[in-house]
Image 1: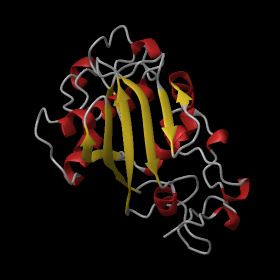
Image 2 (image 1 turned 180 degrees about the vertical axis):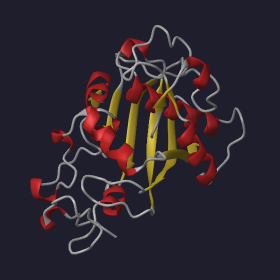
Image 3 (image 1 turned 90 degrees about the vertical axis):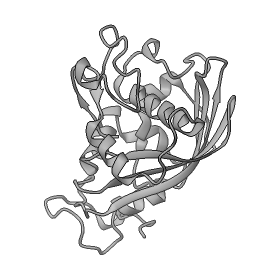
Length: 242
């Protein structure tokens, strides 16, 4: 999700990350101050397919995950996190080995979500070669209005919450040498949250198809959507392009 740094006063009214401004003066922020999500919030409100009642389980889950994403992306110390239990936290993506809170914070959410066990020749996003900063810059570039996220359905309540989600944005900026298409990129997935008695997250499991994301960002071999100022070998075109 795209965001910018703002003053405490500017972010105090965020509707989906209610505590973003609390303890802002003592929090260690990655970019010097708390972020504002005005642009991606607008994209979310324009494109969401569900508008959940205030206080509903669906709204609570949706806002909790938006808040967790904010903390992973913008805070640099686990002691400043309010959404998770850092000592017990594990992130599991597509059945792979779980990442600890420290590991997730170190590599960033994009690299965590796009880790792959594919052979090297089929890896069209190599998370092990990306840093936290480079991964976020790549997706901020591709989605200048942000990458919105919504809960589609919640199947079970706490302590083990199961939900379906949708992630979407518009490919309006270059992505790793590939020219933008202006088209909407979206994918759906399933997730679970295991929470403690104070509703802090201990485990997150996410299942989705990365090809639904990368297939729209990396053009198929022979297409003319690549940025002519970049030299990207044909062999690096995504085989999953739709």
